[in-house]
Amino acid sequence: MIRPDDPANTTVSDDALFGLKAAGYARYRPGLPDAVVHLLAATQHGVPAPVLLDLGPGTGQVPRALLPVLLRLVHIDLVDVNASMLQAARAVLEPVRGACTVDAFTGAAHTFAPASPGRAPTLITCCRSFHWMARPEVLSMADRVAAPQAVVAIMGDGSLWTHEADWTAALRELIQSYLGADRRAGTRGTYTGPARTYQDDLADSRFSAVTEHHFPVARTWTPQDVIGYLRTTSFARPTLFADRHPEFEAAALDLLQDHAGGGALKEDAVFSVLLARRPGGAA
Image (cartoon, rainbow, N blue to C red; front, side):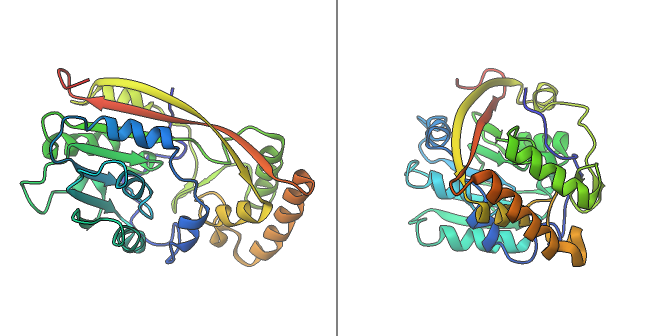
């Protein structure tokens, strides 16, 4: 079952979480597997003019991956509480969007309303971000704005904190030696275990017809890329360490280089996708 990796905060509404610059996020966060992109595109088979609503888009990975595959995409709505992320996403999409229009909405996902009533989303995506949102309220919003046959896709693959390998376990222990045993999360404190799964949320929503899809993903990391990735996370962002951050990064780099042994660090992940429709919607 898919469980959120972080507390379900009502909203994370400032730039303190990932910083004012999105370049590191774009560079170090893994993209979508090709199989996931084609699965999302296939949900729009028979839709003459697909409209994408991407919630928590970060630097635009989902629409950037979909545009070359879903050529009929006519409009994209990006929704994020982080203005710098939205700016970066729009910049990434501008050279490749063609005739597809793009709007950006700065605010909590559950407060979104389309700028144009004629652009009801036919695909709503939420990649590695649903755990930050007021989930039942987001699904209610989706029911209000979405087209009758719309598909909601909630997806993710955990993080290097949750991945189980010798090198990630050692890295977690190092982070905990600086920040304490409890995992840091968001801007509000530490991680607490979720009471509900995403499947529970969907079962209680109008989008209760759910199919699950799981894709194994093998990744390799250089020690330097892991350091860059950590800077973008809520559990190891630089501000948590204050003036000890340079010391932490030096220790982390030594640890990662020891585990890499002059080669690469391996991550065997599973990218999971929940495709949800209203009962009676197209399969």
